[in-house]
Image: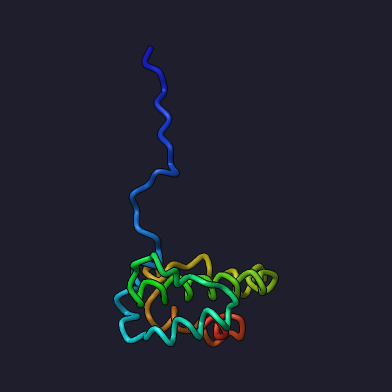
Length: 110
């Protein structure tokens, strides 16, 4: 009998989900990052870290979106809002995907 091999899922080489938006944040400046840090009361810009400004901006954006979701978790559990969570963008046409943002809770995400 062959023993079961358990891999350590924590040692994943997958890039973070926010990596997809880094190229889209190329217009962000160091000032934008510093202002976001102040607004969120967090600090990601460490002197010894050599990440790019767009990468720092992606971390802050991810943090801001997650904070928003946590603050409104009750809203996101409501059936009318939760329905949209169950629909992946590739499962619906563009018009139907865009429709979710007409709802107040989803609109505030933007």
